[in-house]
Length: 379
Image 1 (cartoon, rainbow, N blue to C red):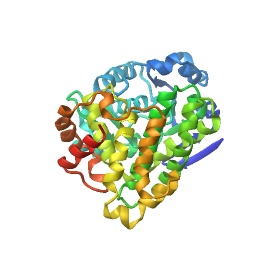
Image 2 (spheres, helix red, strand yellow):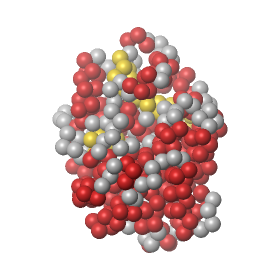
Image 3 (cartoon, rainbow, N blue to C red):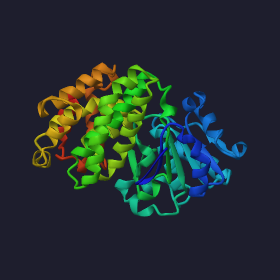
Image 4 (cartoon, helix red, strand yellow):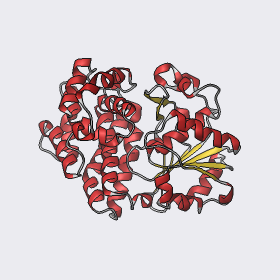
């Protein structure tokens, strides 16, 4: 079993879920509430989690997390949390369940509505160490939210906005690749491309954080080398191990910031919550890589050469086409058009992207015209 002390305490290996009760004791959770979604519960994964807890009969499960967590879902989960007098949360699932749990952890311990804690509205300074403890158990290899300092929530006003704070990083991450073995092929591909995009974008970000860059480029190598194996052979344990590592590593690198892929994905996901975030990232990534190539920070550090080396292509010009070809081999949509996106949606997407917290950490700051071109190229 690997114990990784970086960002938070991470238990990483097959069988790591067996350490759940010990982790509850370590972080001070004696009365946990589980946050998950109906699909994860139906797959039997929540039962496997409950089997590790000594007082499982007293644990309440909130399984109404939507595919893109909403402010309404946060209120519903918060009501259950407060009624049960719980003292911490166990998030079981993908990024949606983990982000919802983080939002509940903040709202349960701070006064005011959720919108008070949105980063772009000055919410970072309002989140304190009083935040309830969260243990995160990912069942997909994609978002890396188990080690992330952010949570994305669709607000009542339609914005998909981020809560950002070191205080919402889960106190414990239990990364057990065993829990991902039954993940369907298309979801493996979509969540895997989410992880790969995180590694690409954090590496390209111009912020100076060399340890994070090293983690991102290694995570990219692992994800790129194993995503097709994991997608085509769901029981491939080695591939699942490396995909979970790539997912965690991508989020470990979030300290550098993301970029235009995510500002667009957040904007479009807020406009149509039915669209899968990882798939959107995969659609935008080729165009954004091309857009970023001319940035001074990219050229100075020869980042395109390093990205080309990590994914095994001959040179910088082949990186973006290689991503597009990988999307095709994985069975993902050919572009946004196949996902129901139409040009008349562009103005709303662009207006939201310009205000997103990821907008300013792209190597090139996109204008409205740039975003229009990126959307058009991604159709």
